[in-house]
Image (tube, rainbow, N blue to C red):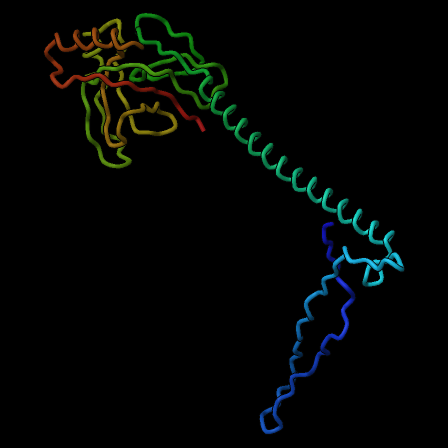
Length: 249
């Protein structure tokens, strides 16, 4: 038969006493109390019964013992259910956070991006206004922040500038002369990263570039690169994959 333990009422405990100082010492204005810890609880073996009285040693009747046992088991069951509920809620919270993060990641991947208007001889249907040196792309109405799909460009020229130097860039007249060499592929130049200017990824902040649009596929980009090299005017020409966009905030 299992043993059940109960705490008996405390008896014979030690009384609290003032921690008086020696009469020869300086006496403090407030004297601290010293609490003596209580005695360990008395363990009662509920399996030992008095056969004559039908009572458990310690003064508990069998009916009281059964009631206490049932109360303990009920309490244990309730505590177990509570802990299970807490653990379940924690697991569900972790799953919900993971699903939310995954949903945001999927939404970011599926976010629409602008397509490039890479041929300057074809009108670009877009709600944004672009400068002549910009690489235009299609933008929905009332867009404040927008960027494009990845595309390839052939780097024709790069100019190194100082930090926050917006006065140095490839001159527009040079861009126009280069555009005449590639009439069906937009030649564009970058400016400093101001809200009114486009940004170009994969380009250093201290560089201003001139490049020609080379399409969305590597095969098309290589054909454009070959045509650039055939002119003999851009010996350092190279391919680069990038995006462009604007942040109107």
